[in-house]
Image 1 (spheres, one colour):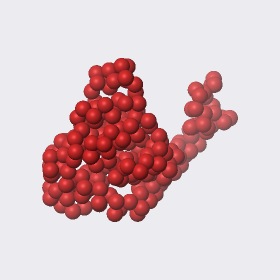
Image 2 (cartoon, helix red, strand yellow):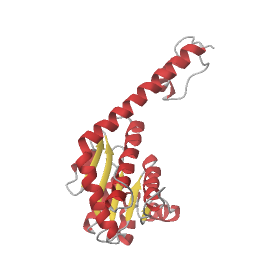
Image 3 (cartoon, one colour):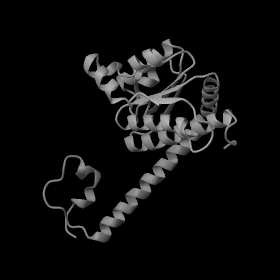
Image 4 (tube, one colour):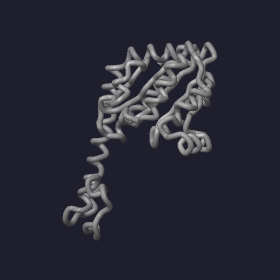
Length: 225
């Protein structure tokens, strides 16, 4: 197996340098792919342990607060951009249609394409989540915002609106937390200490699934983890 012909697409060479540096045989390529996979797997395991050690008490407390609000009729609103939008939909699905336990009211603010595009086109993308919370949110609800950089302007605006409405505010960010770490209005912020978007999103998935399980336990719906 020789090297790939023609110039690689921008960014591809940096991701897979072993495919473009001279001639490579199949065994060498597979060995490098295996090494890279093992390295990434080890990194995400390390990150998950790191977050667990740093945030165990905060996760328990946050889940308890979420359970109190659900028990009082509160609803959960999740939001984010790009891959974080997909994660926000998964957050809502996990609570609304769980594999076990109680079905809890939850909604992703990126699910209604008509609303998202109307607000983006007519008002501005920065308010696409805040305007929805202004219309739907109320005291005792829960706002969960995801941002790998922690710097998404529309996520920040949404948390500002959620705070004005007396909602429980929960942020998930990466690296050093970005703008979310600078806010003094968040009730909880869980930061994944990594600069890799992939590892951040993988660890955030663990965080919100742990929050779901602990919330269900606090409500008496599933056994203690």
